[in-house]
Length: 377
Image 1 (cartoon, rainbow, N blue to C red):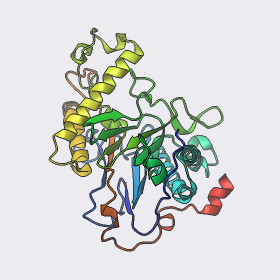
Image 2: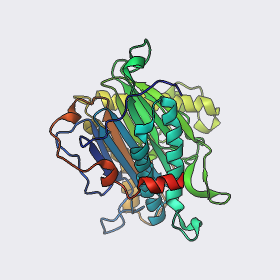
Image 3: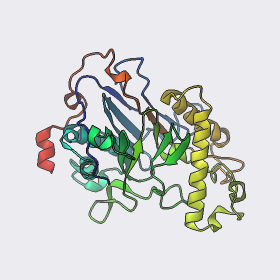
Image 4: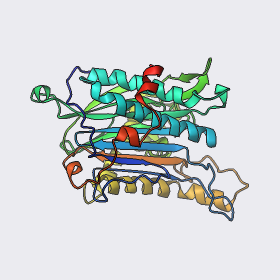
């Protein structure tokens, strides 16, 4: 990571919280358009009921936007049930709480990287901390990080951006960056899914999974990318990006300009690059189909794409509840899942306007205090 110095995060009462799913927390102003988050399920309904397979939803997210920066986290509990839901929620809350308490002390991008690794460790510990048997705890993937403003001394230099996204990931959630200047989408977390042939393998997770209850860190990655005003970032669970994948959309390698008839017969890096290019182009198509670069409009269109893509398989399962769905992506494209998208724009002009007064975020949002965190460290 670069050693660029950063401006101190302004953690005052001018902040916005987006958190979900199923929360009473609302943005502090209805006119806030910098960020948007949503979680749904694309699984089929059980016969003669409005309940869906896979309930409860095990995805969760939180975004906190300040006058000059953002803290965000998305987590996807592994498998179904209360345990992965609890793991996802605990990890999200612990990760963002830790950053709330410690981020102001960081002075460089490199220090933030170290902070994110520690926050991830804290999130893992929060999952198992009160379990008499740690194997009764669930597991979850997690992608979280910050957007920070580069100091004037560094940002005035050639090639150094005004803002930087720094994030840590374990598992298969993804972050996509849309450059307003270049009109291009880049997968910031490129390559974090280690098993492209098996969507059931997230590549890694926190919570007890290996050895003596350690996390699975096979695909742990720490990345940063420069941002400019007007850029967009979309942080999504695999319930979104699996429905951008050409293979699950029923596209053949030849439709992606590859000389092969089967995805499984391709070399790993060849298939990975082709899929990444297709996913980024598909997201760019959705972004450019909107009337404005509004994170809410784009996020809703992205979610609608996932719902529509999986409709054939979902309808079959609802009409034939005792019959297994045929594994045919041409006939039944897409992947049903818990589906989360958090989108935000790099534009901090709005956040200083017309806010309701609220308590400091570190008191409002978490059950962790500085003494507990210092004890953990």
